[in-house]
Structures are given as C-alpha cells and as structure tokens.
Image (cartoon, rainbow, N blue to C red; front, side, top):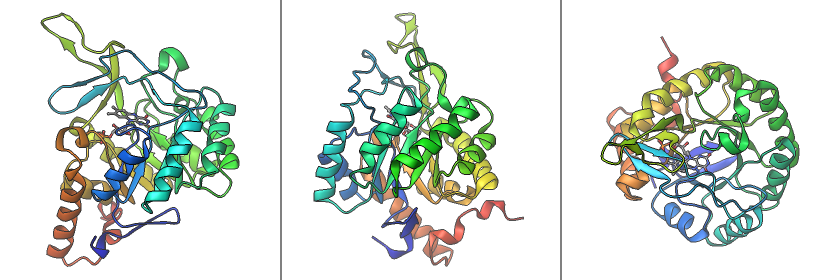
Length: 308
Ligand SMILES: Cc1cc2nc3c(=O)[nH]c(=O)nc-3n(C[C@H](O)[C@H](O)[C@H](O)COP(=O)(O)O)c2cc1C
C-alpha cells in the first residue's frame, strides 16, 4: 500500500483511509479478513447487540438502479459470538477492526460496549441511527438530544480506553446539533451517515412494496451528495475525526468526503455491486490523484473544501 494513503484514526494507524462500512459483510472473522486482504484500511462488524436477533423476513434488500433499500432489521448473533469472531480476526490480521454495537436501552448500549471493549477493537462504533427498526425500537436515539448525550457518556465509560465513534444519519434534520451533542458528551469520532429514509420500492407487477418490512434505509450512489453535505456540516460543527460514509464507490467520491472533512471513508453498498475489488480501485485512484496534483498525503486535503 502506498504511504501517501496512511491514515491515523483515533490512535490507530490505517494503511488506507478506506473502511468497510457496518452491516455489509457480517461479523464473521474470515469474511472481514478477506476485506482487509483486498485493501481496506479498517473493517467494521455488522452491528451487534446483547442478545441474538433474527432480523426481518426476506426480502430484506432491494436494488433500485442508483442504490439499495434495506431492512435487514439488525440481525446478528449477539455479543458473545460477535466478540469471539473479533478475536479470531485479530489473531489472523493486524488491520484495525471497528466493533459496531447497538441496544434497546442506555444500559444495553453500555453493556454491549463493555463486552466489545474487552477485546480492544480499534474503535467502538455506536449505531444510534438505524431507520429500519422503529417498529421494534421506537424512534432512533439520535432523534433525542438527551438520549444521544446519555448514550454517548454511558458508552464512553463502558469502553474505558477504547475510542468511541457515534454513527449519525441526516434523517431528523438536526445533524449539527447531534454532532455537537455527542462531541460535548465525549465522543472521539463520528461516523456519518447511516442509511437515509426510510424509503420504499414497489414492484409494479405485484403492486406491493418489495421489502417484507415495506420500507427500509436507502444507501448507495443516490445518497452520496447527502453524505458529503453531512460530513461538511459535522466537520464545521465539531472538528472530530469523521468516518465519511454513504454512496462512495469511486476515488472521486472518496475525495469529496475528504475535502468535506472526513478522516476516513467507508464503503458499503458498493461492495455489493462492484465486489471487493472496489477497495483496490479506489486506493489506486486516490494515489493517482495525489501524484497528479503533487500532494504528499491525503491528510493535506482534509476539509480543504471549507477554505475560501
Ligand atoms: C444491507 C445493509 C446492512 C446494514 N447494516 C448496518 C448495521 O448493522 N449497522 C450500521 O451501523 N449500519 C448498517 N448499514 C449502513 C451502512 O453501514 C452505511 O452507513 C450505509 O449503507 C451508507 O453507506 P453506503 O452507501 O456505502 O452503503 C447497512 C447498510 C446496508 C446496505
């Protein structure tokens, strides 16, 4: 990997700024290891909870041409199995791993974070923004500034010396307030954005929504401009490191995230339509861009779109 891509994120050294987004390839050590081998600088597990969750019935994902709509419903094997997979991954691979966690209550968020912290992931990412499970979990915690601050503080305490990133979405219209709230509560980083919506795709032949849950979170190229704007606003509001996420599938997309203020850039849906080769392609495109413009490191471009 080219040194110009070396990225420092909350104390971890990444060989590339590219991160596998949460929920794309589960929690299994072997599949996360395979992503690292393909050029990701860090990998994020599927979000896991205290108890195992089966999630929603199929169909849970539908493609609509410029993205995906998913309502997987946070299916996961529970903290114990997930943490065992993280350990198995760490025995095989030094590429940093990010543990994504969620809960139904503040106490659950803290408890699952405490379990995750025991295996010292590079970061604990806190999913307070999944739009697919409102019927079971109520409105996502990110919509309530008090809850957001309380969860951030509780997870920070439970995580001890493991840094904590809070994952936000633009779905409630007060992203800057949410970013400031988590920054004030001690978050070390922000991941932005989760899926947008919810959205819906209707099968015109069946005349019914495709997803069993009817609606789901929108991801992929369709949401890139929303994600870039979100990163821009969060950078201006907090200056916390940001894992820019949403719609990235090319080097140009990743550069937009960095120029908006992202320290690292996550790739999710593009793995489904482009395969794992997308990591090497985007890394190569970034190296070419830096060489063509005589820039020594990607960090020099971070937030450059704010100058003027
Ligand atoms: C099938 C699928 C499952 C996802 N599961 C999770 C999850 O468990 N936790 C989470 O924080 N985000 C989850 N996400 C959201 C992604 O991590 C990412 O924030 C979002 O898809 C935007 O990035 P993208 O456009 O590159 O996919 C999921 C996305 C998809 C498409």
